Image 1 (cartoon, rainbow, N blue to C red):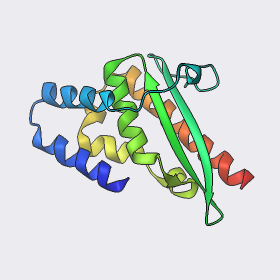
Image 2: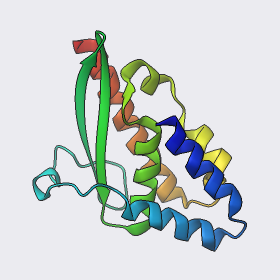
Image 3: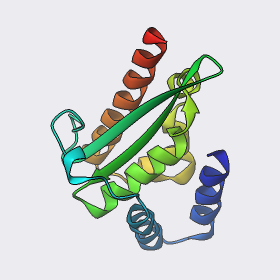
Image 4: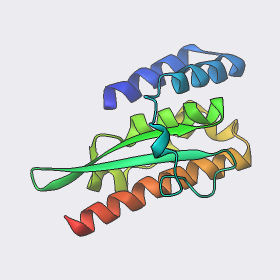
Length: 142
């Protein structure tokens, strides 16, 4: 997964204008694997997001450590791009890494922290906290 994040960072750095970066973010959101309609449910809904966001979590044990994979969706184009970024950062990683990985570093590096509305920033924090909570729960039950 790290190479996917590295590619995204590299592509962001090539784009000088924020309009181009937003367009790229929307493009990333279009690449999200579609969620089944049944996954758009209350259990998967992320609380604290202004837009509707759903995260589906699956846990597999590899070498006695839980590894989490995520799928997500949103009803807003830019938020779908943010979901894509967050999943690229966290999905497919061991629970222990997920808990210690700070998404804020990525958002600062991409310059997104300064260009997201407070509402969207709160939504990003809610998504990250949900992912870390799922990781902590997977570690507790492993």
